[in-house]
Length: 476
Image 1 (cartoon, rainbow, N blue to C red):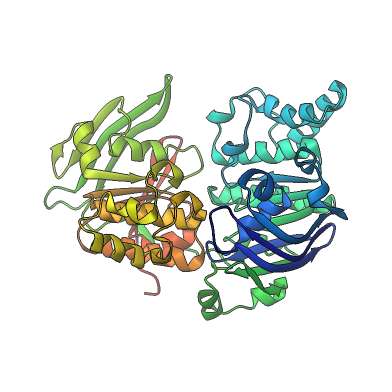
Image 2 (cartoon, rainbow, N blue to C red):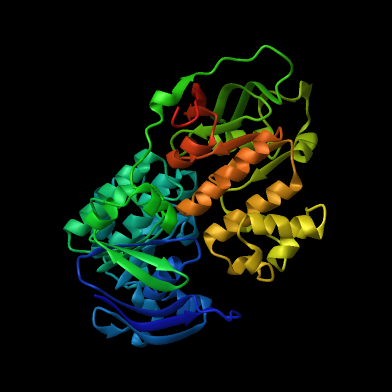
């Protein structure tokens, strides 16, 4: 179904091959999971299968790549989508329409399907993905989990034999990940071939037929489910993988009690925010002290990112008060004292090189290089940020945040594209910043990260704070 024979691929303006001597045969109906450290070549493999590597990004391809027995180089770019459909890490980046129904129709229209057939396929795809009640809604008012279901439905309507997923769980809460796994299982039962590049492996153990481990653009190891399930913690750390089981932190949670002494670093009182008369945040009360690392959790669309934007002054609250160190701060002052690391790092990278990006905010060139080394980015110092992998971009924006040295640091899903090794690195850097008196608020669905990094866990649902717990250190 998918056949690589001694494939090598190098991106434009790069001297290093992103894939080297790759040989692999994926059989029809198989579910293949590709994993490895950030920048190992996982995403490039997906881009070769769906044609984006050669037709969109450009570059040099050597070796043989076949889809269902056809040389991919001989398949017109427009026709590859009928053979291999893609679901990207950020599904909104692949949308072409404003309404859900129109998005599902888009691919069918481009392939010239008759109207009656198109209507039938849209209805069937929507029903199978559980979005038939969303067809007339705007795509951009949906949560990340629902957007991803729309992306899967839009590919289902085209009905290719191959489904390519690039880190599909990165921006999803645990409930949405469970639903994603159900949708993948249904595709597998229908005989579809699934090719999944992923860091989070726990939800794929019952789906995958093989796990592939990549390192520096090379296929190092192929593993069965039983083999990878037998890995020890030292094996997982050595390979830089994520945990194969979700940690249970419930037994470490106790209700948070407000401290009476002194002013908290952050004090939010009765904060409210609405979008087009629809309440997004309702009566939020929250305090945070110096040294706190607070996880803000909750389902997609609960208001977590809106809360972070309100704290740092990026949006104006409808009502309520935000105090820093006991002083009510206007939005302009909040922007100076707080720094927000956004979910998608491309929107915060501006310079011509990785080192220049750090030099914009670092106190000295020595500090910039020291931070690049700490975040394992020094070998990429002369590269343009756009050439980095998703995980490398995330680490770069975190290094920039550390250089800015804000009083309050807010991060939106900072570990979504990170392998196990770099997730643990980020946890350590945040703990170090907290120990120096910083206040850190992390919007995250990542239970593995919360387990090793955070001191407190807050849960939002429908714009309201429903839980606020202290998290005791692990292994006590």
